Length: 188
Image (cartoon, helix red, strand yellow):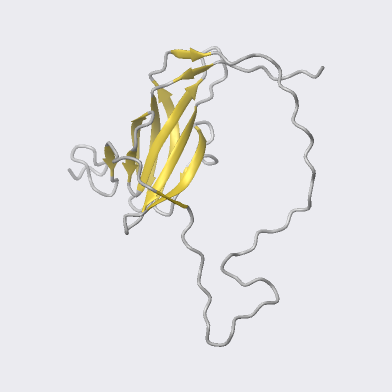
């Protein structure tokens, strides 16, 4: 029997804490979001679904499952991120947008300890290894094909999956608009 890593208990938190960077102004804003609440940071709408931390006796690990939608100028919503964010590695598990970056910094307010079962899991079956093929640029024709004379090639649509707006954001953060008393340049 192989040794399995120990599973640690988790604490469910009602609030996720994020930091957001506006790349145009260079401002970083920290904001709190309740679980299942939607807030808007610039053109991004964030909805955390769960936020976990570890007890003080365990190695620190702060994680949150987040859905991020981009609101376009045409008021269309595109899902650009759905997944886990880890506070310990914001560069690997944050949202990098053309103008706004958002990452998880903390979870807070939790007192509910969720005990995970300690039974060892069966190892997954071995995967079949296939040679990796490089990704193809969707804006280029497949090798050996040509466009008919006088015809143009359309480019790929914007990335992200179109979605319907879930709910109106409860808070809006626009770092390009100065907030009285909170402008780091001191220009209130």
